Every structure is written in C-alpha cells, then in structure tokens.
Image: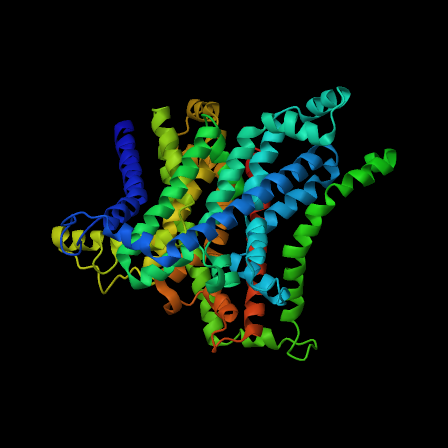
Length: 269
Length: 287
C-alpha cells in the first residue's frame, strides 16, 4: 500500500519534471541543430543561428533597449519603492494597509488594460508612446516584486530598535537607511531587484502596445522571428531563458537556503 | 487613530514621505484607469452613454469573453488538481535536497511565460515538433490535425506550463499546516485515510485550494503574450481583442476596447477579492 503510493508519487513527479524541462531542452537543442524535422535527434550541430541573430541590426538595439527598461525599473525599485517601504514601516504604520492595497492592484490590472489606460491618457507629445511611459508602466507592473521581499525582510528584523539606536547616535534618516537598514535587509533587496529585472526583461505586452516599433525590446524581436525564422527565434529564446535562469538562480543564492524565495515568489504573485 | 491625535504634526510630516509614491501611483495607474472607466461610459461626443457596453454584447466580443473564461477556468482547475497531487508528492519526498530542487524548478518555470515559452511549445509540439515526431514514429499516433499547438487545446498545454508550478508553490505551505498530530489522533480514533482526508485534510486545505484556483484563473485571464505568439489573430481572447483596439486594427472600435477593459477589471477584481479572503482563512492554519 505504502509502496504503491510512493511509486505513484514518483511517477507523478517524473511526468511533472519532464513537462517542465522538455520544452526548454528542446529549444536549446533546436537552436544549435543544423536540420531537425524528420528524426528524433538533430542531424548535426551548428552555431550559425546565433551568428545570424547577433548579426541582425536589431539584435544589439533591442537588447540594449531591454536592459535600459529593466535597469530603470530596478533603479526605481531601489531608490523609490525601498525607501517608501522603510518609511511606512517605521514612521507611518497607519499607511501600511494603503501601501499593501496599492501593491496588490497591479496584479488585478492585466498588462493590456494598463497599456490601454496609459495610451489613452498620455496621448500628447513628448510622453505619448515614449520609452519613459513604457518604463513607468513597467515600474507599476513590477513594484510588488520589489515590495514583497523588502517588506518581509523589514518585518523579520527589529527595524524600530535599529532606527532608534542609530538616531541616538546622531545618524540622519538617509544614513540610517543606507548604512544600517539596507545591509540588514540586503537579501530581500537583492531578490526583489532580481525579480524586477527578470520580469521586466521578459515583458512583452506593455512594450508591444506602448512603444511598439519605435522602441523595440528583446521579446518583440523574438516574437517577430517566431514568424520569420524559427532557428533564429530558438537562439533568441535560449538567450531569454538563460537570463531568466541566471536571475532565478541568483535569487535562490542570495536568499540563502530554505523556502524563503518560494514564499516571496508566491507572495509576489 | 490614537496616534494621530497624540502626535498630529509629526504624523502629518511622516505622511509627506509617502506622497511621492502616492503621486506616482496616481499618475501612472489610478488616474489613467479611472479615466478609462469614465471614458467607457461616454460616447464620441462626450455625453453619458452605454453604447460601448452595447457594442461588446455582440457575438464576437461575447465569444472572446467566453473563450477567455473557459481557457482560464480549465487551466485553473487542471492546474489546481495536478498541482495539489504533485505538490503533495513533492511535500512527502524523503530527501530534502530533492524537495528543494523541485521547488527551485517550480520557482523558475512559473516565471517562464510569454514569447519564449510559446516558442518552446512550437518547437516540441508544432506540426514537425520533436514530441509530435516521437508520437508518430514510436507510438504511431498522428497528433495533427486533431491537435494543434496553435489552437485552444495547444494553449491549454502551454498555459498549464506556468499554472502548474504556481499551484505547487501556493499549495505546499498549506500541506505544512496539516499537523502530524491530527492524522495520529484521527487514526487512534479509528479513522481510515479516506475519512481523514474527507473530514480533516481537505476541509483544512479548502481555503488554500480556492485561493489557488482564483489566482490561477486571474493569472490566465490577464495573460496575452503566450496566446499572441502561439495563435496570433486566430485566437479570440479578451486580452487579444483589447490589444487590437490599441494597435488600431480597422475592424475594432476603441470604445469597445474601453468597455472590454472595464469588464476584465471587474472579473480580475472579483478574483483578487476572493483570493484575499480565502488566503487570510488559509493563513489561520499555516504556521
């Protein structure tokens, strides 16, 4: 009875793992296969598709644009969301329910709806369809990913005692935040920053609708290639997957062992 | 309240520190959405009107809502059932290392949505995809044209890819809330395992399951990139229809887009509200 149960469990887990990794492994292999449409394994291997991708004039442009948008969202998180979260935790606890609500809202607003709302309201130059509008939308959409881990870390440490001791020693708010609080909540800040980076880097909807062709990001180029050249699309997908892997592994690494990152990802969702 | 009457001035200046953030949210989130709401209730001349809502009661828009609700519902329920089973299997694994590794895999894969994921499914299940070929050569099963990754059945498979790990991550903390002592007491009182699950286990997991289902539903309902990459304009989903009104497809009326956006917000709002209630109930059991 017990044994049957565990065999059933292992079969379930096995199918789950296959379901999760086959699409990824197949994409990695497809991106280096010379020809792969009649047999189970590719007939040969090549890096030509990567060469074609790198040589495409839009490759470096879209990659740069994606990095600009992702880093801007991370910076906004670090210099805007983190201080606000700290301030609310220590000085205005009565604002915490409001902050919690504002951080849940982005999950209730589908990206297409946010894009539509921003486009309708900001239909004048120079904001209309600008990278600035895209970045602002990305900050709204990604701020819960920064807020959750930081807020959890702040609750885990004794913020009040730390703040008061620092105040007694003559530190100002800026010094307290940067030299006392930030080092203590560094794992939260880092996993928040990496989550923001990874989600904004992969963001397609806002970029496609707000800036579109005038400021193409990496996922836009990828979608374009899925319709034009599957091999190059595979190479671009691999680059995209790799960025996501690196960010996720870094999150697991900075958060240390245990289930913490899982909780943060869940809470952020 | 007591704190504002005690130190009104300090509290007021402390609130000033939150103002920049509130202004940012107002400018780039709240005000645009509220204006969209108002706009959806006006006609082209700016007078109050329900014409936009009348427009979306035509078959094509009703069908897109129905498709979105069906796709989200099916993937939420399948994701919840299999997520529950797989989550329980993972939770009971004897090796903590393997458990950690599977949780890490779920963490990573639930974020693999959008264009790259859609393309990965084309690679394995497209008309000459690896899995399609394997089925044909080893099992003698021709998937096409009965199945197509570019159709709804394909979309369900692709959506489950990010729904399943999300459910696993949501449900595992709930299993941790099931105390060993409860199973032992039930067992000592003569309950078999079916009775235990029926009377104790499932009732305790129910709030987490409901929270999981609505979150998965909302997750699928708002998704756009995966469906757009796989099906393009062949698939009528609400998000795809709304996007058409933004990109200015001739056939699509902007007013209809505003009304659809508002109905979507309402559906999402209901999901998030149910999630909040169910989640706070679930937390009562979580350690």
